[in-house]
Image (cartoon, rainbow, N blue to C red; front, side):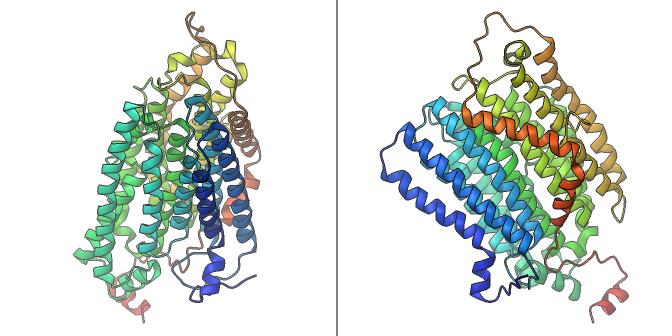
Length: 511
């Protein structure tokens, strides 16, 4: 087992090898993409090369996951949590690239650089998962966000796309400024940006009541709240998701959320774990508001992409329950949930890619009677909806994902009864729109004037089959999956259990 002493450049480079491989490969593909003239064949070639680069990076991540050893303190994490997040991010990137190849052909997009932008965004996400310093978190967010801004406005012929991209850029820049200001205030209070060092100084100097620290934590919470699209920082999500190209929407809804939650949880559990009594109520209130608003407004949607946007907001609330648990069990439950959510989201958007007609939105009416024309397409969509709902057996891994989050909430040091009850009740509410999609596919006739569904392109078919099979198989054998995910339980560097002691005892513990 290797020992990474991250104070040495060679060990730091070794710990960052998967990230550097993806970044370096993306730079090479960028040169290749702009070197040749734009064409449909060239964008497909770059897309295929990007997929192979992600597969190679995934191999490097898996090697690091199963051969890692002791990790010393440093600004970069080399723990199981980081590498499990990288696995989920790379699986989502591969699915997005595969859908993007076919969707670019459908929309007549020949710019091969779109695939490279996705690779660069994933590089930022992997950096966010590895960051144990607030400044590196900020760098990862910026690398991810700048690429996503461009991808959101990829379709320059779409008014909705331009509106969504502009709204995302303006609100994203504003939220990033809030995040950076929060980092500055935390640094002002503690004198450091390293996560474990922040924890140490908060405990040793008893900074729990410092206004500078409290305001900094509040601003960080607002910044991360925007990135994970929690209520009330969610207003950008429906318009941006609706206006963006389908693969980019799936990528933002699943993969961007994975990276944002990974950074959010690491900062909160490693830097501010001693102050769990201070931030817990705020996170719990965000979770409840996000679950209620996301699922309630989702009931009113008939545009399938907007429905999935509010579904994404609701799932952010479910994931915040895992963060609010403030435990290692909650962290591993969050990882398992993100894996299930990523599979179901990309599968659902693969169906939307097949049903899309130009820039027109796909509505629930377009799904009417799908069973009679394309039965396997309807069955696949039903699996994805049931997985997002968390339905037993037919929802596969989705049921266990919600079960583990619920279990983490109830088995926390202070059981989160209110969060658990809200999670169950809002899941029942979400059945109203997930089961509605299934109902119109299987129980309504196909409209007489509806256009025939086009054949499923090869890469889109691959994503649909792979995600549906993974959802069902992992739902039948969840124990084996949990074993690997628990391996990714965050050994968050020098994680210290929550400090909930009287001041005299706390002072004694620090000496």
